[in-house]
Amino acid sequence: MSIDFSITTQQRTPCMLVLDASGSMNEPGHGGTRIEQLNRGLETLRNELQSDTVARSRVQIAITCVGGPSSGAELLMNWTDAREFVPLPLNAAGATPLGEGLLLALNSIAQLKEVLRKHGISYTRPWMMVVTDGEATDPSHVWSEAVRRCREAEQGKQAQIWPIAVAGANISKLQEITTVPVRELGSLKFSELFQWLSASLSAVTRSRPGESLQLPSSDPWTSIKA
Image (cartoon, rainbow, N blue to C red; front, top):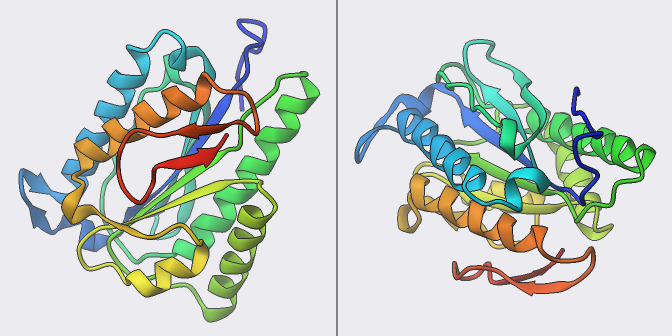
């Protein structure tokens, strides 16, 4: 990662997006294909964060892509302060190696925390938002390891995991990675989802690590500790 911490040593709020770009994301929805709507949602997130004078210097975003032209999982965008955030367009193709993506994302979060500690920069609990419209296609041992690591991260307060199920997702399997209730996107569209995310991250940036806070309304996700 190439973040210039000399610009600001303010507390950071990390947010990892694990995004499904498998072939099924090419299916049509209201206002375009799912992948087109997801790309527009990322632009909404960018605009909302950069319009917030506090969030744009404190929120850090990274993106792990699951599927896509590579058919694997890759860190599509390394950690970037929100003021520099320019989302790359996602192209849908291939399978859904979600377990591989989750492991990659958790490793990246751990690496960021080491860098922040090295520079003496405080941070709130990292968020990991997982958006998928399918079912993990990883070998069973990879998925099991991903579930174990996610649960450990959650229980150890190393990450706050938010599961989002787009139409067609295997909700019960997605629920295996976290105790946070899976939210179906049917009642929370892509643009609205990322507006909620931006507003929530903005609230977290203004809190102290470990402080309880109320998030913008989106039951059942209403209160957490930063």
